Length: 332
Ligand SMILES: [Zn+2]
Ligand SMILES: [Zn+2]
Image (cartoon, rainbow, N blue to C red; front, side, top):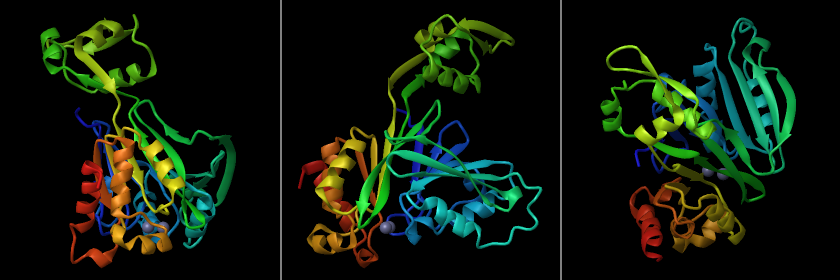
């Protein structure tokens, strides 16, 4: 399957958590956690449309100012989702600066806080000096925080000591591959219409509705959607990437993660300590590498990528990955 999600750990396995997911062919990205973001260029930052924060510990949120700095002068709306307390935490961050000269700016930050039942929303506008403007919330007991025609993000609440840490599953509703040779045979041009065609397929069952298809010979041809699907596309289960971090090693958490990550193509999950340091992991409310691998195996994930390693393993940089992969592939 050609990947539509291109995930990248911004700071590697030992640095602050931040998973940048570029959405192929859309010029957009999503960000999971907001640790140090200096490794991202302004161009990369400005592609971000939504940010998903697991929890408010400093290593997951310190990069927020870099985002704010990049977006401030742009006519963009950035959405940010997080657990209980995130609206007040970001209101506090925004209140830490002076905003007397931003009346003409159009940047809007929408912060949404999920506590398990409802999604509460507060808007912060640069033109108002980022004063909090609470909006009507909505029911969100299914955890479906974010939905577009081409991807959705669902969350699960994990215990991280006495606070929530959110884990996220990013999913493509239906994976649509275009058969290039079929395009050429019909004399259709490759172009932006293909993204529109895929969006239509995600939203409706293909029928007799017509789509204007540009031709290599010039002009366009009106082709029924149903006919196009049969001739140029093949579909399969959509891609799924799951992001999990900062979870106490409890059986309740493990069950929730396995359910969220079920059949993921990629599970990106924390592996903070080696399993022989399980007592330390329990004390610090983190997963061990072996548990990360076991979760991936139980969830039947296709690939496993571990991160958020404790710096005490810097002199043995492969150790945690090795332990996790052995557990994942061989059930050790
Ligand atoms: Zn952390
Ligand atoms: Zn934490």
